[in-house]
Image 1: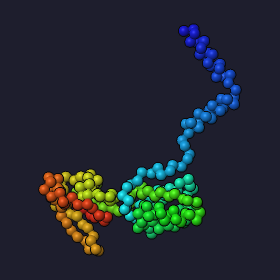
Image 2: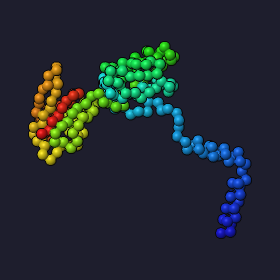
Image 3: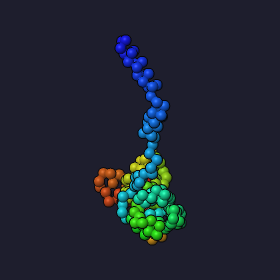
Image 4: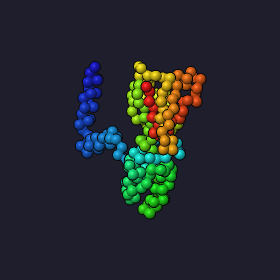
Length: 211
């Protein structure tokens, strides 16, 4: 017991015997170790889609990363006019292009200011393409249309059916060549396997009405 007490006193005295600069350096090193990195992450955003053919639209959010150029890299929304704003380039048309096409366009335009620019474009939020679910579902509303989203997947996103839902006659409204079409889908026949073809892949603007 006495040895432990003597050892504690010795360590306490040693701590106070350190030169002040040494203590300050130790504290500074500890703070730097614990401090979060201030370096901007490169392409750290999670893509909302990996579809190479995805077409960017208004209100989508893009992560534009220019390698070794954090001052030019930005996370930007696509404006209603279909354009994004970036340093050096000002307004650039993004809607109507795939991420790879926009990356190529930005690369070409940045060559005037940066030697061999390397540009990556990632869609982090899909807001331009939506489907609408109304009626007897848990969470009616507008939902992002994910690549390949089916009728059943959309219903699952809306939280499933309400208590009084007619699951045998669900209305799907779709615009085709400027005209609205109506299709009735039997949910029961999809899940029992008798009509799997009715689990259609949805398109932007589709409306599902559960009565």
